[in-house]
Amino acid sequence: MDFQFTEQQEMLRATVREFVEKECPRQLVRKWDEEHAFPMEVLEKLKKIGVMGIITPVEYEGMGGSIIDYTIVCEELARSTCWGLASYFNAVIMYGTDMILHCGNEEQKKYFLPGLARGELLFAYGITEPDSGSDAAAAKTMAVEKGDHYILNGSKMFITLADKADYTITLARTDKDVAKHKGLTLFIVDTKSKGYSARPLKKMGGFTDTTCEVVYDNVEVPKTHILGGSEAVNRGWQLLISTLETEHLEVAANSLGYAQAAFDDSLQYAKERNAFGQPIGKFQAISHMLAEMAVDLHLARLCVYQLAWLRDSNKPCYKESCMAKLVATECWTNMAHRAMQIFGGYSLMYEYDVQRYLRDSYILLIGGGTRQIQKNMIAKSLGL
Ligand SMILES: Cc1cc2nc3c(=O)[nH]c(=O)nc-3n(C[C@H](O)[C@H](O)[C@H](O)COP(=O)(O)OP(=O)(O)OC[C@H]3O[C@@H](n4cnc5c(N)ncnc54)[C@H](O)[C@@H]3O)c2cc1C
Image (cartoon, rainbow, N blue to C red; front, side):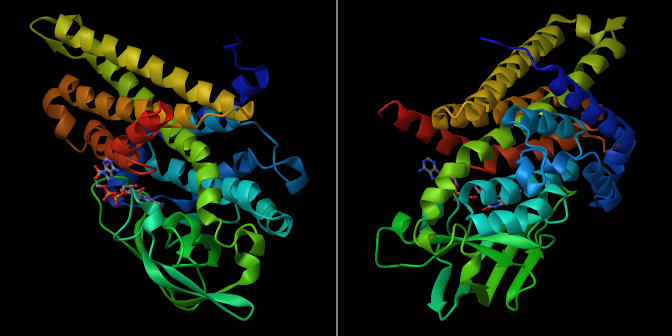
C-alpha cells in the first residue's frame, strides 16, 4: 500500500493552491458571495493553468491526468471556499468531460472533448425533475423521434448552471411502455435550441453559481446528439449509473476541501480568541471539538483518496463511492456546525465566513444523492 502522492501530484497541488491564494483571497470570496456573482475573469485565469483538461486523454488535447490528479484539483479549489470556482470547474469536468468520455461515441469525443479541455465549453446535467429527484428514473420529460431528430418536452429542476451552459445533458423518456429504468435516453441538448429556457432559482447558499428550473418546449435535438449514439437509445439509465462513482467522488472531494478550510479557520480562531484569561482552545470543550474535527477530516480524506485510487485502478467501487460521499459531506456539515460554536456570536455575522460554510454545506449533502439514498445503496451492497 502506498499512501504517497507522486512528485508531480505535489506540484499540481502547489500550483492550484498558489492560484487560489492569489486569485481568490478570502475577502474577495466573501464579496462575491454577498454580490451573488462569480467573476468570469478568474475562471479565464484558471483555464490558463490547464486544469480544465486534467482528465481528458492526450489524444483529445487534454493533460491525460489520473482521477487522483482530478481529486487534488477539486480539493484545492474547494479549499478556497469559493463556491462558484469549484462549481464551474466541476461542471466542465464532471457534466462535460466525464460524461462524454465514458458515455459518448467516438464522433462525440472528437467534437466535444478538446473544447472542454480548453475550458471553452460549459455543460449542465439535467436529471432531476420537479416530481423526481432521488427517484430519478421516474423522469417524465419525453423525447419523441421525428425523422433525423427527437423532440423534447418537459422540465428539469435544480440544474446547476443550466442558464450559463452551452449544453445540458438531459435524461428523457424515449419508451414509456417498458419498466421505468429501461425507457430512458441521455441527450446532449444545445442550450441555444429554440424552446429551451432556464430560470435561476433563489437559494440559501452557493450564491456564486446558479441553480435553475429548465423548460423544454418542443426542443429539437438531432440524433447525432444522443449521448452514446443511436445504439444508446433506451440505455440512458445504464450510462448514468456508470458515471455515478465519479460524481460521488467529485462531491466528496469538494466537501473535503471546504471542510479543511472550515477546520483551519476554527483552529486559528481557537488559538487567538481569549475568554476568562486564556485562548478558548485551552478549554477542553473546544479542544475536544477540534480533536473530533481533525479525526473527521482524516477519515474523509482517507475515504476520498481511496476512492480516487480505486477509480484509477479500474476496481469496482460503487459502495466505496457512496461511503465517501456520505462521510465527506457529513464531515463538512458537521465541521460547519462546530465552527459556528467555536466562533460564537461572530459566526452569524456576514463579515465572517462561518455562516456561509453552514449555508453552502447543505447543498452537497443533498446534491448528487441524499444521505438516505447513499445509505440505501450501502445497505443494498450488504445484501439488505
Ligand atoms: C443546489 C442544488 C444543485 C443541484 N444540482 C443538480 C444538477 O445539476 N443536476 C441535477 O440533475 N440535479 C441537481 N440537484 C438535485 C439533487 O440531486 C436532488 O435535490 C436530490 O437528488 C434529492 O432529490 P429531491 O430534492 O427531489 O428530494 P426527494 O427525492 O423528494 O427526497 C426528499 C426526502 O426523502 C428522502 N427519500 C427519498 N427517497 C427515499 C428512499 N428511497 N429511502 C429513504 N429516503 C428517501 C430523501 O433522502 C430526502 O430526505 C441539485 C440540488 C440542489 C439543492
